[in-house]
Image (cartoon, rainbow, N blue to C red):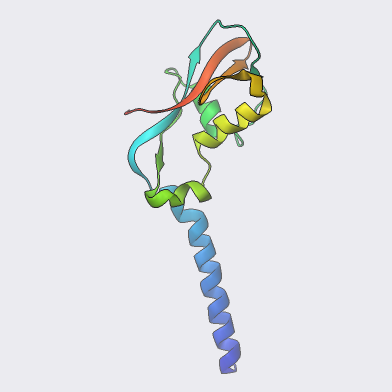
Length: 130
């Protein structure tokens, strides 16, 4: 094998390994107290986002919070220097997506009114200890 070809294969392999590391490693990084997507029951009237049919793959934090007994999703820790958030799915992304589906359902900054199986909730992201 020629030297140029071997060097090209090594560079391509390093790029592939680097891209795989960027995809896998940020999920394992995390600092500080975790954030949880929290759902709280409400009787307030008004527009709400219907989340009865949302996918667990698209909204893992929301479906986790709705299925849990305490209304909290599993924790999400931010990464150092904001690097992790660029490469991973966050509960902030889910609340953003909900607020874009029905903008009138946003009650306050970061708080969205949702409807799940006939029950109404507020969905918000909070920093809480376990």
